[in-house]
Image (cartoon, rainbow, N blue to C red; front, side, top):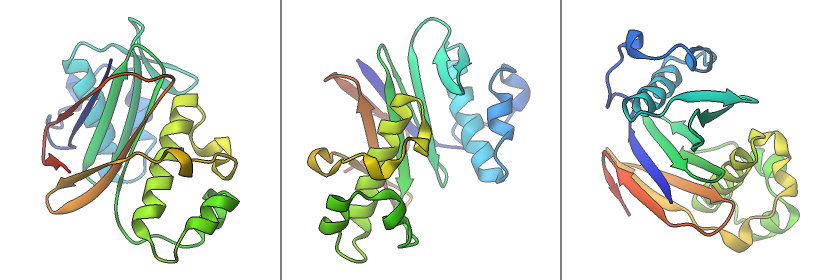
Length: 186
C-alpha cells in the first residue's frame, strides 16, 4: 500500500524548532523561500505522523523501513509513503521553455508532441521525474533515455484555481490511497 498525501505548504505551520534536525540540510539547500517552506511542510508532516526520516544517498527513508518520496511545486506538497520503493512528482501547469523538449523527451515523445501542448509536456515530465526519484537518481538519470509515452497515467489536481499534474512511480502494482488535504482531485 502506498499512501499519497497532498497539501499546501502552510498546512502545518512554520515553526522550525519543532522539526528534527535530520532534514534541515535538505530544507536549507533551497534558495527560494517558497521551496524551503514546502520542504519544511513535508518533513513537518512526516514527523507529525511518526515517520522518523533519515537519508540514504540523499533520498529520504523512514528509520523503520518505510520508503518516502517528496515533491513540491508552487505552494503544493506531495508526500508518498510505502512499503516498497516509490517516487512522486507534482508540477504546477504553467508555461515552460520549449528548449526542455530536446533535453527531456525521447525521439518517440518528440514525434508525439504537438507544439505548445502543455498537458502532454507535463504528463511526460512528472512521469519521468517520479520514475527517476523511485530509482533514487533524480533527473540525473538521463530523462531522454526513459520512454514513458506507453504508460502515461497522471492525476490532475485543482487547488486554488491552479492545475497540477501528479505522478507516482512504483516497483510493482500496488494499491494507492490518495489523501488530498486541500483542494480536489479531478
